[in-house]
Length: 328
Image 1 (tube, rainbow, N blue to C red):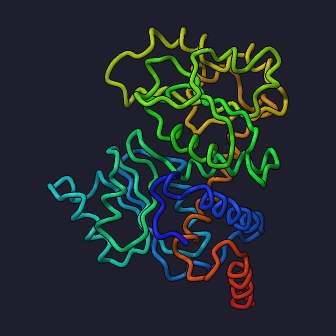
Image 2: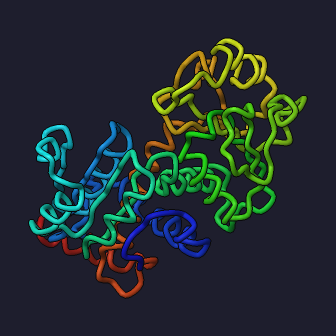
């Protein structure tokens, strides 16, 4: 059991496997007609988002509710921050209301670590600046594990992450999760969209990575251009970017049918993906969204449950039995 989840590196390979194993149990819960268990009844989870979000925020709120936790949502634009209140004071004020876990997204790198030092509640990093987004990395790993039937690890798996890696916390966390499980990850981007510290395998030649028939690639992970984080023009124009780094119809035709096509969303259609993803046999973008709920349920349960073994389904099974008893 972990008190907080701030990065994949802090979680470690064993922690990644623990969460993914627990996500299998949560996925089974989510397939039930009534996908709700009282495993975290009496716990309170507060979402504190300082950046816009659709998938992550709703996914965490859904996950908490399916575990029967109470939820609170903090709206920065309508808070006392506009009156000069500091982030520390805000967190301490909310914590005083009785919060067991904070789910925080902040534009500043390192903010979740500060919050973790200001409260006794658990803290989940839901994205900090360009730095980390651990639950996205976990749900991506879970998607690959289930879609390619790789429960024992990713040894020999060939992954290409393509696009604006410089500004992408998803690229960093997903790379960390995949490599922790043994995958061979290659970053594909123009030099202007690579971070100062470059991953071991990096190239600007997407066509070489895909190959003539796509058989050398198991996962093609596309990233969007994060224009909101850019202060200068880092590519000549979007048309040229798509020509060199986009998933065009020609490149899609070269992919092997079993090659997974992934994207964290939202998609800039016509830029990084120039075809309809629904027409790609290996597209699992919607599965990523679905799996995000199971993985975030696993994360919250791992942090907040009082069971002695968070990887066991005994507590969940007992919770289901209790729920059925109450309903009867």
